[in-house]
Length: 142
Length: 147
Image 1 (cartoon, rainbow over the protein chains, first blue to last red):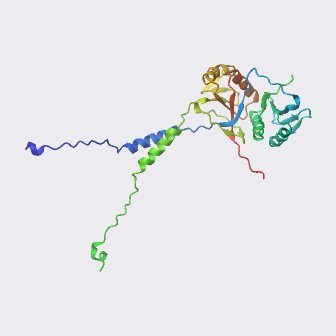
Image 2 (cartoon, chains in turn green, purple):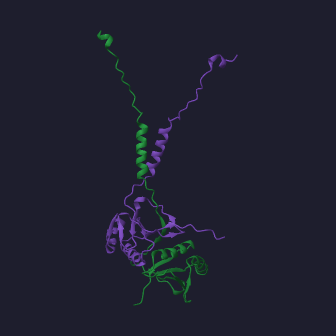
């Protein structure tokens, strides 16, 4: 009787893989939720050293003044100041750079002017291929 | 007399089920993609209005070499989710800049409408910390062709 009742034990030597797809989907959902694609983009500048002072001749300076309301005023060398639009700045700089390749763009922003106005000027200068840009705050006489 | 008419018509063997055997492969493929491309958030984004610029460039530096400095419209500075007084920014960044061997890039994420005085103060602090590589974070401005 006991011989008839005894059954052969079936032990498989395989790793069960039926749950593998479930695990993969679980991990997939986790990474889908956790992923944050970085948006590292912007306008690249290199700041000068803290003690670094570079002497530039007046004729090599293209002065750009940004007023609190976003008005942009430019002065080329000894010429009188004039107002320009941000989109005009690109062409003006290219004209200047064609005449004098050593030209430095000195951007002086009023302390109360919004950051976006400085960005629009920096944007125009970088589009025009300006390499030497100085960012300063406009000194206001008391 | 055809077989069909004699009642011996064969049943079609076309399956009505969607084959699911490659599902796991697709899942693994996507899983590997997301595992490789994932960069876990180190800090929460501040609610700022992004300035736009047409000359916006993608920054290719390694994620670990970029430090985010947020400036809100009020002029408040945030680094790693913490509000940092303006005069303490240099002291906080200086050791990190020195440890990175001057390869640290500061991504300056300032609100479009923040007064420039705060940006100027921050630049002074960054120069004091010995950091020279700065990116003014912007969104890409798409311009209409004028020609």
